[in-house]
Length: 172
Ligand code: OFO
Image (cartoon, rainbow, N blue to C red; front, side, top):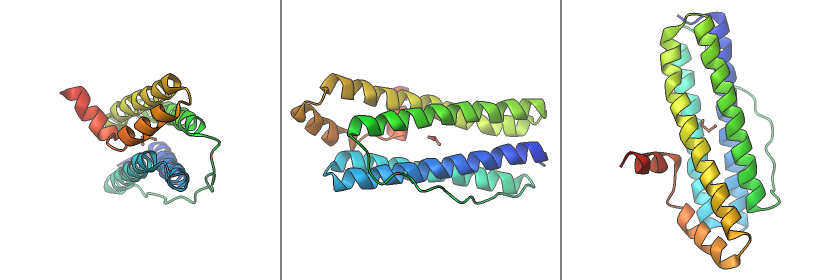
């Protein structure tokens, strides 16, 4: 059974994961209209992954005797200034999510809820990978520095990357 505090913290996280999914969906859609097909594929996949993160929490809360709250979401932006600005936003967003996950972990420890603490470790590991991936993408964009040929190759290559595949690469 989760305590009220832990239930509240997990439901906050449900909202954040849902917001991430919506945010990346908006980014994917914008990229698609800009002809950035690789970037848009990457972001559509990323958006789906965030939805899975949300679902995992929803099911856990309910399984542990709590009640998951399906949140109302703010409208994400329709357009983005540039691909660099888009990925800057993504990195900032992920850093914020990591901070929030640390807060949930902290609440679990204060509440002596070691089961939820254990459950949250999956999110801690996931955030390390997601932040690393976002930083790698930003490094590549800095390297390309607006060069059209470089952007073309970047768009082509990013289609094959996902957080999961990047994590698998790391394990090889
Ligand atoms: Fe759910 O991992 Fe990103 O936000």
